[in-house]
Length: 167
Ligand SMILES: Cc1cc2nc3c(=O)[nH]c(=O)nc-3n(C[C@H](O)[C@H](O)[C@H](O)COP(=O)(O)O)c2cc1C
Image (tube, rainbow, N blue to C red; front, top):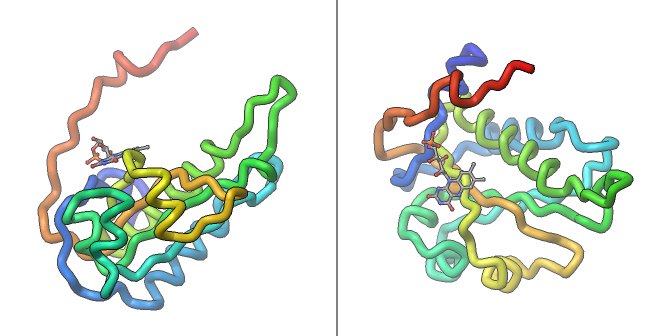
C-alpha cells in the first residue's frame, strides 16, 4: 500500500472477526516495532503479545469492552522508564518512545489489512496484574490486532488552518 493510503486507511476498529492473525503478519508487525526510532537509541521498551483465546474474561479486566478481546491478539507497549533517555531538564521520553513503537505496530498492521485501536484508557493495576509485569515496566498503550468486522468510519479532523502555525 502507498504510505499515505496506509495513513488514510487506518481507523479505530471497535469490532473484530475471530479469524486468526497469520504468524508471518505478526512477525512483520513486530519487526516494524523493533525498527522504531527511540530517543538516544535506548530501545527501552517491551512488546507484550497476548493471545485472547481462552483468556478473554481475564484480559477484559485490562480494558472492559467486549470488542477489546474479540480479536485473536492484543499487543501492548511497555516503557522501561529507568532506561529511557532523559533530557537535561529531567523530561523522560518514555511515553514518546512507546508511542512511536505503537504507531509502527498500528500502521504496519493497517498495511497488512489488519484492524487495530489505540487503547490508553486501560486499568493500569489490572494490566500489571493480568500480564504479570514487574515494576520496571510501565504499560503505555494496548491494541487489539485482528480482522475488522466494522467498516471505515469517516475521519473527523480539524482543518490544517486550525492545526498549523507558521512563525
Ligand atoms: C493515545 C491514544 C489513546 C486512545 N485511547 C483509546 C481508548 O482507550 N479507547 C478507545 O476506544 N479509543 C482510544 N483511542 C482512539 C481515539 O479515540 C481515535 O484515534 C480518535 O477518535 C480518532 O479516530 P480514528 O482513530 O478512527 O481516526 C486512543 C487514541 C490514541 C491516539
